[in-house]
Image 1 (cartoon, one colour):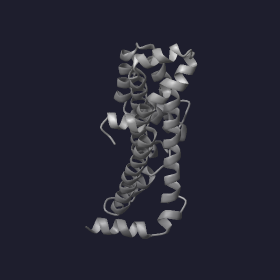
Image 2 (cartoon, rainbow, N blue to C red):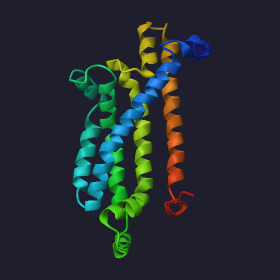
Image 3 (tube, one colour):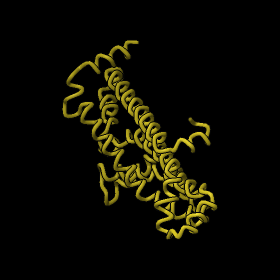
Image 4 (cartoon, one colour):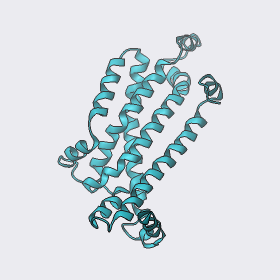
Length: 229
């Protein structure tokens, strides 16, 4: 219980919020890293997933790509990238986390395209829609719920995993935990616990916000069909 009390005392110290290594600075870094990683992940995964899904072939490619990226440890990838041209710092972290975000983004984009009924596509062609018009007016709007689901999963995972950015001097809330370990056994326990609570709370908050976004973009008819009113 002493550690928990010490953690609250640590949170109550204004300097732990406002100093150059404080919570507000590290939170901003954490969110920036996570945002960039998910953004780059979307720019890569969504076009590939949509393209393969529209072709109706390539499920094996999606599975292989997802398995490869899932099997690659983020810590190992961070180390490899930081020793390469990207160097130590934010760029290596963003690329590593972007790779980590690919599986849910890619799989859900592919599934979203495959779940569209062929009769809907036939109706669109019968109305004279071109392939591009079919994509933007029919297919993507119907696939939005799947894209939102993949985005929610990827964002939550990235926010939680971005804690490892501190290993390669990438900033973020992980620095608070790392600095706590640097204080030595017993002395930094409150700070370590505080950092862990911050990361967990942020991940839960982001997941909740993304769940609201997912619900907002999913038409009520589709929610009812899926059993989610």
